[in-house]
Image (tube, rainbow, N blue to C red; front, side):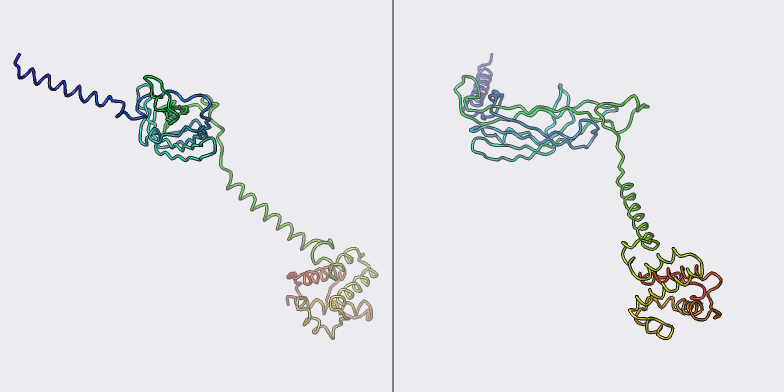
Length: 345
């Protein structure tokens, strides 16, 4: 062999061995590189908030986990051991299609422990023509604790690890492949198919409110009970009394007298045809029935004083009096009365 080639070959191997010995030196090794022993039982207390469902995910969906670790002192979390954003895990040697989208963590110091809260968000980047199982991977995080002189173990530096458990779910296809009979595909993991009935409920509430207001308005206009607002006024009471009177001569006299009493009670004085204008000036709500009031005075004159006197009421004065009293009742309530043909004229 050529001596030059031999020395060149030997020098290269010596240099390579030198650098490998330096890299293997414990002084240069990272404290969290390589496998570490499991943390002792009872040091860590874990609670996890998983996604709200385990099925129905597809490409682009984000699944969020909140992991809370209550770690006894003096153990502290090594931030360098936290999962790396963008890292795509493998499952059984295959790319899982689940990527860590974001991670955020908080620490709360207590007297005898530290509470670490990890907010993990994973995004789905895989799909299939049929639903397939998937997994949010188990994460290995490390803690720094008291050093233990254990030969050949990273525990000499106090580095221990803890495994956050995985979580299984199912990824659904974007489109249905082939024909599916829904009655044969009722998985117990799939919740009931709910329809959003909020618009219909709101519409129903509005319609019920309108119905209630309409019924109250109709009850107020047509009601006969004294306990309703403005139902205890003179013409309201007179109308309830007149409705009970018979259509006889004696009933007619009582009805006329009752309306006279209501007019006087409304004006707080006696009302006749000569002071009608002053009454309407003080009670303008009754101006709409002024012609009816004048016709009423004509009927009153015929009933009590001049039996042969003519009036413009017609052959059924009792029915007219009921309608006239009702129109006066509407006026005292502030409503617009339904005018008769003569009043319109």
